[in-house]
Amino acid sequence: MTALGFLYPGHAAEDDYPRIEQTLASDIRLPLVHVPARGGEAGWPGEALAGEAAEELRLSGAEAVVWASTLGSASGGPDEAVRQADRLAKDAGAPASGTAAAFVNAARELGMTRVSLATPYDEAQTETLAGYLRAAGFDVVRAVAGGPASPAEAAGWNAEAQAKLVREAAEPGPDGVLLACTALRTAAHIPQLEVAAGRPVLTANQVSVWEALRLAERRVREPALGTLFTVLPPVRG
Image (cartoon, rainbow, N blue to C red):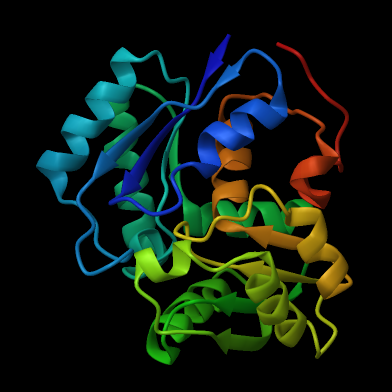
């Protein structure tokens, strides 16, 4: 049994995690602990609350922990993202990361250099994430701000609305489209999004789970979760 832990801000699309767990259909568990959402999806919960949540995940047996907030792990820049991950790793007693770093690592895994960004955020928040990706070495050829949408509003966006957004982001012909925000429910239709974009699509909850698997040194092949979960053969620990 491999347990992978997630700190999730507020309540929006957290049901993506049990859906992904069921899709993987293996000995992988995805325990999730809620932390307050400060300033929408963007806010780091603070050291005390993050520490309590990480301790809860440690007691659950989590072998890796991810701060499942795209903006929350990107808005302070790469240095702050590393600091957050280091603190979570210390509190959880396991390797840790955040969704922003997960996007970077997943895009590199697929060999992407030119990416487009699609978000339910406003333009300023979208540019914050685009800046994070540029700092990581990516050429962000387009950044489409579909919002501003609150986490609750983003959670209500269906597959058709998401497909429209990624289709627009894909127009310049990037290597892939990064669909940000862990408040978006995407786990049920990632292949559909990839058809709409005509290229790989990475989504926030998808890459968060993939990153936790990577940290735990587990690789699982599952085409229903998109191209990212097909690039390597399965590894059963």
